[in-house]
Image (cartoon, rainbow, N blue to C red; front, side, top):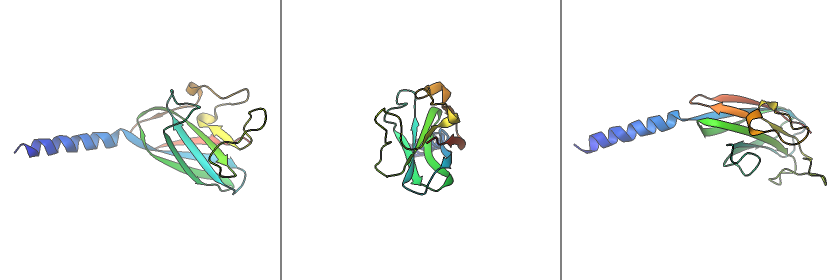
Length: 138
């Protein structure tokens, strides 16, 4: 008899856990070529512009590509995307440290004079899927 309440509790936890994560659909516009991959990083405030724990990738296609990032926990996140044209798994930069591959942030947060602040790129995730537009800049 003790197993029935335990199973009910476990079921409730599983259902509540499923409701606290969602899929981010990152719609990347402005992809310049079919070379390489599009890489997406989803970062909390402490990992923004550093190594982010959540990510996804998709083959590059000229124009627009949607990359799905499943199971993103509820909360505030920022999305960064870049076009890894040579597929070396890192964003290449020139001698001055400026990215030499296409990149962009959620809300198309401006990166003209350095990277944007977390609050400029924040996306709030709840229980439902969220579409996040990102336009690459080369």
